[in-house]
Image (cartoon, rainbow, N blue to C red; front, side):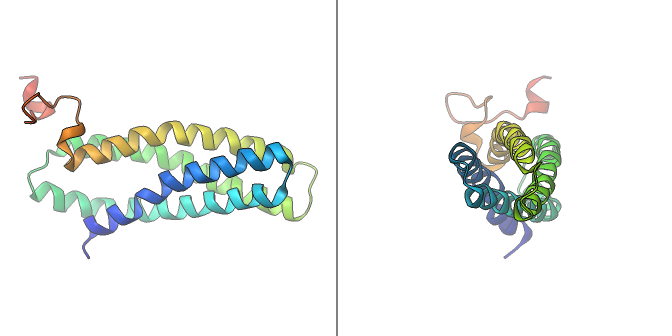
Length: 161
């Protein structure tokens, strides 16, 4: 198993897990069920960890796909979007840790943290579309916006010349 394979194994969980956690968090807040809110927090913490693992395998994956002839510009675009997504995911994970601890201590401010985590999760979910799509476009040329009707791909850098 090489780094590109590991990258593809890890990269799905931060996005898919985020949506599961978001659904559980919304339901937990609506029903005022601390156990569900804590479950969402744990999912978000795992998303952060898996996101970090994804980032750690990204450079190795980049080297492998560039050897396959994939344009560096499309990979670089994905990398930039992923770095922005991860900043939000790190914040989400850290506030989830705080929220979990506050819930366990039955702290008065625990509800405020759950709403902050909800906002961060919604923002991360919004960003996840860009990171997932840009990653998929690297090897799935059929989903790129500038794919012509015959299925060929013109490199972004080359088509503007």
